[in-house]
Length: 307
Image 1 (spheres, helix red, strand yellow):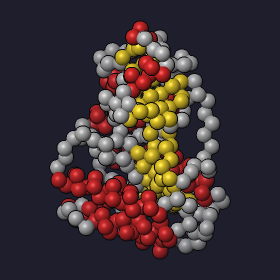
Image 2 (cartoon, helix red, strand yellow):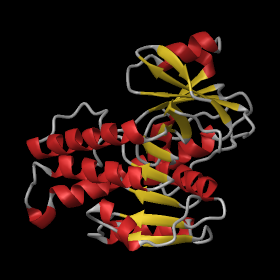
Image 3 (cartoon, rainbow, N blue to C red):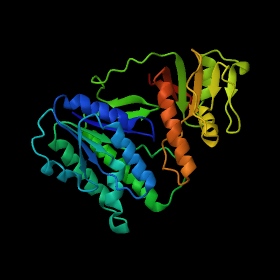
Image 4 (cartoon, rainbow, N blue to C red):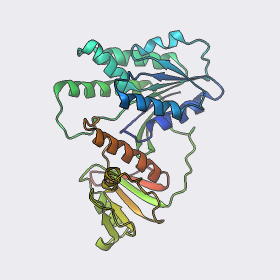
């Protein structure tokens, strides 16, 4: 089985990919194909966290920043119950696209072809990518070319994959195939509503949960919200406040609390270090909330039940 996992930053892609790889490999070998080339301390810290996450999962790490199709040639005795975890398409494309510091306009064709060949050449594989396509910003030509090329690689790979999953707030949304190999029976006591800005999240919450204005606490970046309210809106601002003040965001909500958050994860990685930290922390925080909640995403005012 081949699986493509995509989605915004810190939405649980790597964790799910590891679970999938372990399920697919059973007693077979597990290979973590690392594509990132670390350029600074932030990259090295990210790699360290990933190593820590999988240290007891019996992965063999294979470094492959380019030419992904060559990995198979360097691995013997994989067997039909072995599995490869490729993390990530995002780094792989960047490495090929900007090799030698010069933009290669043909890189997407090469990478997508290599990924296709790789997927066809193994029994089981899990591919991780990043959803960087839901932005309102106007980027420079090279950045837009990169986004377009990554989307092309994802579309190509989706054709050959049995299952395609988008991670949102730690919830797997299956766009192709199924997730029968993953057991997700977390207890639910909260309600989480997520979506882009101005999509109608609060209107939906008011109507669906019969809320009045006195039931609602709107978070700001300047002070703590009133957690005694039934509905907490803009929880992402609460995470900002916690980061600025050296606090750990609280997850101890009363049963039945409705939590509303903007989706701030599906764009280009912010240049500002604090903005990156905020986005990552918020993504991890929403994963914790989602594990205890019914989850609904709002798009164009329309609800989509994720969990």
